[in-house]
Image: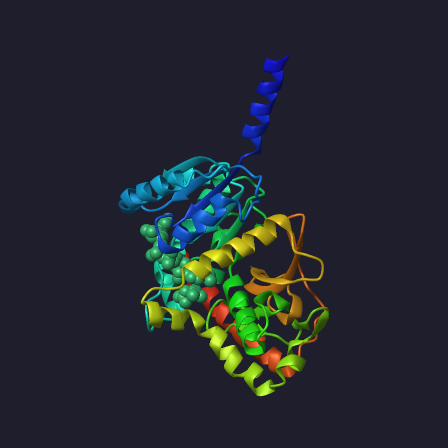
Length: 346
Ligand SMILES: NC(=O)C1=CN([C@@H]2O[C@H](COP(=O)(O)OP(=O)(O)OC[C@H]3O[C@@H](n4cnc5c(N)ncnc54)[C@H](O)[C@@H]3O)[C@@H](O)[C@H]2O)C=CC1
Ligand SMILES: O=C([O-])CC(=O)C(=O)O
């Protein structure tokens, strides 16, 4: 009898393990990301994990070192680590994937300058996900240009619902939230419902028209009323968020990594576990044609999430200023999409 109970417990434990893939696993974002995932920050403090770590063949030596360090952390939730350069091994049976592996930009480049170098990675990984991953996999694309790479990845994985592909604009959301909090001298989490519209690029539109801030315990007011400076919110604030990635590269000579990893964790955790009550988060998702944004573009919208399903927050008033910004970033996404399709078909 005891033997049977123990056996059943073992079976349950084994089947409870969630398989998660991280690509670019030997790179700088992954170095922070893997730590947080393995610790339980994303899938919950009781969720056992198997991590598959994909990188290219020449990086297998470095990846071996990352695996050693993960083992040396002695994480209770980490049941198995599979380092590999083979997409089939990396994506087989996977329920959640962080697609980080791609070339980062250097000083003076725009993210779309990476298209030619990176988009084929996402075509190939889309095809592998289509063949080998679980059909309900949740895919977060971080590698730049993130929106267009996510679109291509989903295009080449036709057996997986398009809603299961997203790209990361959470870093932009976190940046916007932190800028407002600093301006008002409040905690970062006092600021809610900041929106990032569009592309994870310098045309994105960080919008605080619908955001609120708790300025004193229990007192929440619109950010516009708290800041009382329309000129700042429409100009300096927008530009600061749009160009923050470039500012980090200029200072560090490397692109954001710790903050990118934190944002990837925030994004996937909210997708997996759900958003709270009236809070919105921004993520790049395939446009269903709302807010006048062409159907099929991978565009960042405010969403609520329940049961691992996102729903765009609809009905927000869009003024003339916002309309222009939202359209400009959509135009850029359309251009990137056409260019990416040409590269993939060549
Ligand atoms: N969406 C966002 O908010 C952000 C996106 N990024 C982007 O994330 C990407 C990764 O950045 P870092 O980790 O700093 O770069 P990194 O150069 O440190 O690491 C990239 C890793 O990807 C690997 N890789 C290259 N091709 C691969 C393939 N086909 N399959 C698997 N792995 C592959 C490389 O060997 C390398 O180990 C870049 O494209 C960067 O621009 C960075 C910050 C924020
Ligand atoms: O700016 C870059 O190239 C890296 C990135 O996406 C970011 O920091 O937002």
